[in-house]
Image 1 (cartoon, rainbow, N blue to C red):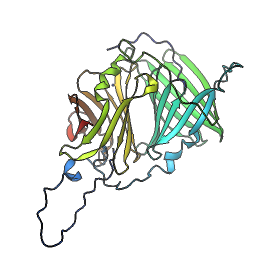
Image 2: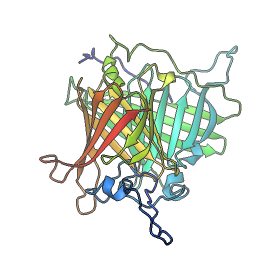
Image 3: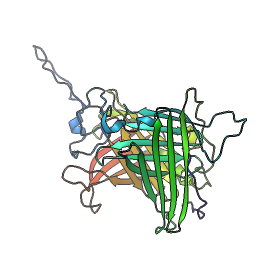
Image 4: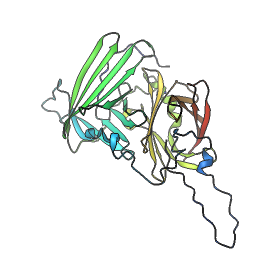
Length: 375
């Protein structure tokens, strides 16, 4: 899905439910035997867990075996877009000697159907998911040569998926960049994606559409090379997040091993996206996207898991510990805030601290401390 960008002023370079943790207990047969010290338990791993706050599955004992909570209902509303496509812009017909019938696009599902992933042949990816807490669909778009943004919306009664997002450039906070996209299923083999981009209050407006035709044999999505996120580039701040890269064993504060996290650079986006894949032996999985937004001058993280949970975080750009914050309602406190801080301890260890605030950020309480050890 291409993103159309006006030439902005020069930017100044300056950022859920684990598999059930079930500990079996049994009575030994006579005669009595001496038992070894008890292994760390899931309950002991998070004694202060907040109901409704999901951190790599901590605080939930629902998922003893792989399930599919996203198998039906609102989670399936975007399925009409899933598949392999060639997209064309009716304003710019393809030349007669074009090697392909359009720009390739591959839309897949992940996390037992809880996420819809887009790989756009023009250079970019999007992470789409339904949030049952807000009743809305959300999209995070991270391009190679362009600029990332986030949108939210719903499937309308007429079958059109309509998402909208607003950005406020750090160099002009009173200015709004408004992105609006609509996906209209024409039939089983055709989808029209229309868009508008408005800069308020300047009156700048841009609009257009793409026509998706279902196909088979779409070539691999190669992406587009760009120096944007490398040293000296517009989004060079992305490299401040590189200390999180690697394959990690994730443990709770009491030493209980929770699962494996692999954080890697997306090869199709020239290092602009750090993608985490978290898995457990019992089938829980999660995806986390972390990236730098040069328009907002902030780090962002979108996190979706196989239980249908979603978390969006934002934080200031720093060279030390990275702290990102977002809304995460908990029972009795619909306006609760969550803060996650990544602190490099050594080249092979990283600490992740989860805090919650029930007073709008005036005070915080630590509810989880996780240790990442390089595997």
